[in-house]
Each structure stands twice: as structure tokens, then as C-alpha cells.
Image 1 (cartoon, rainbow, N blue to C red):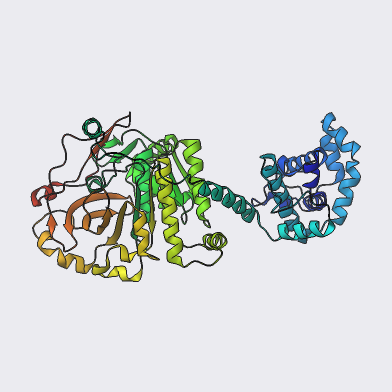
Image 2: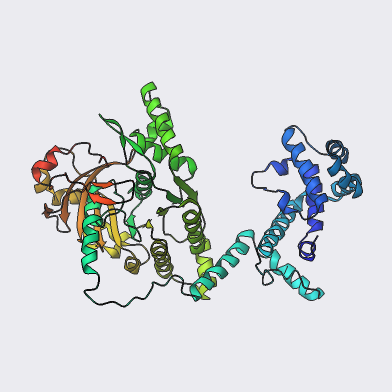
Length: 537
């Protein structure tokens, strides 16, 4: 062993933990207890643990493990048995079982994992002395360092070093944009030529009015979609990422239709677990309500459609992560991880909110408690920086405050926490369920059209790509996330017929171009003929 390994080798907690596992094998079966060879320094400890682990998981009935059990197991492996015998393994196990105290098992486990983590940092060349000074020789310093380590959790240690790395990056202005000087007319000819050959569009949204207003999911742009409980924020986000990463979608009356090329996408959930997210994905792709899927309420033909949808999801470069409690650096690192390792180009984070770890980490960074509005603004800025730095499309969401229920407040002032959050975004949308008051305001439009009435509205309060203060009226089935776009109005409920829903074709070489045969401008007549519309990209 190296001096570092010797100093970061908690032999007493290991001794105690091994005795406890031998006396109570169920401790090792706890899914929250994750141990492996890297958590031990000495070959003897690695061999003993591996033997115990294999005995526990090859015999679910075993209630305790004796020294003889381990001796018999290792006797089949001469090399390992020699190490066991040289370290007087039988006596070690008998003594550890005798002295083990189950009440301190978790304490021993946590200490072992902390030392394992610190060794990992040291192996990567990172100085850990500000967390635990393993080189200290003075008894007082050793005691002080141990006390500090005891007060930190694994998450605290990881957060500490993550913050240090981010601080270094910030100090070197890595996130700052490049400064360029240029003349007003410079390169305009080539710009026009490029745009004529490759128009400035991003991957298409399923909502074709989003395409018309935002020009698709453009790289380096940040969309913030906000709404109250039950407004479909999370479902909309999953739908967007599904359309990016999946190759096909089921359309009623047409069967499975192409969604165009698939691109790596990431959805980060803060509330829904794995199965809930997967059911929403499957419902969107197949057109079968997630409640029907949960209830098993389907025939053989529907089952076949579901199985095909599952195969599409298996093949899709669609990555998901669930994070319940997080800091800004956690989210930054998670997004960066998937960008670098999986080539992710489209990301949805659900959603910007105050959680305990975020509050603690901001206090540590700024040396004082920040107000909720300050934290949320800082978070939004961090997400926008990621979108710009990595040239990806990124979307997120927030809850709304109570004032959002009033129509005159349906703008950036409705954002919970801070109106300043809107300053950091490229596109801002508020989603609402259609109210009785809305229908009263729309009665002159609705009485002149046939088909479905709107049950949802998207209030575009910010749009750096063009027009804003526009309301998109749609009919949305939250069970399948199928949405039929209906018409546009301004914030005073006046019909807008000069903006058309836009279908965008996204070719395999990532050239994006407007489809030649667009949907006709939204007039009373054309609205009446739009039924069960799902764009065929």
C-alpha cells in the first residue's frame, strides 16, 4: 500500500462492518448499501468482503456467516486462500463478529464510503486536505480533521469539490462569450447566401404554432414554459424530447408515421419517477392514454401497438435522470455529462424550484441566505449559459404565482419567485387551462367555427425570435399529450390570421428547411377542416 492508501484506510470501521454483515447478512441486501472492491484498500479486506458478498447473494436463506463458511468458500481459490490464511482470517472473523454492534453499522458504512470517495479524488490528483487532512501528524490536527469529516455527508463532499471546480471555471471566464469587433456590413452577402440555403430553424416542435413563432428548437436557445398544477408542464417537456429522440409516432387512421431523424435528448425529472415518465412517453408515442395503460385496459391490437412503441423507445437515444434534491452545480454537471458522453443536443429540465440543497449551496456560495427570487434568477441564468456554451436547445419550467389567475397578469409577472427570471430566457410561455372567462371573450370566434373548442392556451409573453404577447389556443389530451392547434389571438382576444402553423422538415444532415406546402393561414374556414392534426415531419 502507498502512504496515501494507508492514511485513507479506515480499518476499524471495516472490521466492525464485516462483523455486522456476518451476524446480519440482510444488512448487505439493503439496496441502499452499495459496497464493492474499490471501497477497500487491503487485499485481505477485498477478499473477505467478496467472499461474504458471494455467500449472501448465492444463498438467500443464510441468516449468519461464520469464519468456517468463509474458509470453506475461499478454499476453492488457492491464491485468495493464501492471503486469507496469512492474515489469520478465521480469528479475524470470529473476533469481528464478537465485537460487532449493529447500532453503529450505518456509521461505519458512511465512514468507509467517505474514505473511498476521498481516495478516488486523490487518485485523480485532487487535493482533499481541506476536507480531511490525511497527512496530518499532530494529534490535535488529526482529531479536528476527523471531526470535520464526520459532519459531512457523501453528497456534501461531492458538492464541495464540484463547487471548487465550477469556481475555477468561472474565475477563468469560461462561460463568457467571445468578444468580436466587426463592421456593420461585414459578411452580409455570405449571411444572406447561407440563410437562403440553410434557413435558421431548429428541430420542429409538435406544436406547429411554436414552430411559427420560435422557429423550432434552435440551438443555444432557452425556452421557459410555466404553468400551474395540472397544466401539463412535465408532459409537454417529455413530449418535446420524445419527438426529438424517437423515430416514429402512431397517428389515428394512418398507423405508424415517421418523426424524422432521431437526435440524442435528455429529460431530467425532479418529481416523476422512472415508471411514471416511461408511461407518459409510451402514451404519447402510441396515442393510448396512460391511464388505460396503467389499468391494462386494452385488446390484442392495442397491446401490439404498445409493444411496438416500447421497441421504438428502446432504440431511441433518449436519456432520463431523476434528481429530487439538487444544487445548480448538480444540474450543470448532469447536463454536461450527457452532452459529453452521449452527444445530447436537446435537454429538458423539469423544473426550476427551491429545494433544500439548492438553498444550502447558494448560501455557501454567497455567504448569506438569498431570497427565492434571487436563487431562481441565478438558476435560469445558469441554464441559459449551458445552452449557449454547448450550443444545445434547452427548456425548463416553473410554477406560477397566485396572481396568474387574473388575465391581466398573464405575463412575466406571473412567474413564481421573480419576474427577473424572464430576462435570462429566449422564449417564455405560460400554459393555462381554458376558463369560463376565456370562453366568454372568445365567443365571437367560437360561434363562427366548427370542431373542438380550446381547452388549453399558451400565452407567449417573450419571444426573441419574433412576435410575442400572442395566445395559442389548442385542444390537448393530457392522457396522450396529443395536441390540436386551433387558432391565435392577441392578449385582447382578437383573432390573428396572419401567422400560420408551420411544419418543418428536418433532414438527416441537420439542414432545416421550411416545408414547401405549409398549412394554410389560420382562417375560419381552415380551422374548421383541421381535425386530429399530428404533424408528419
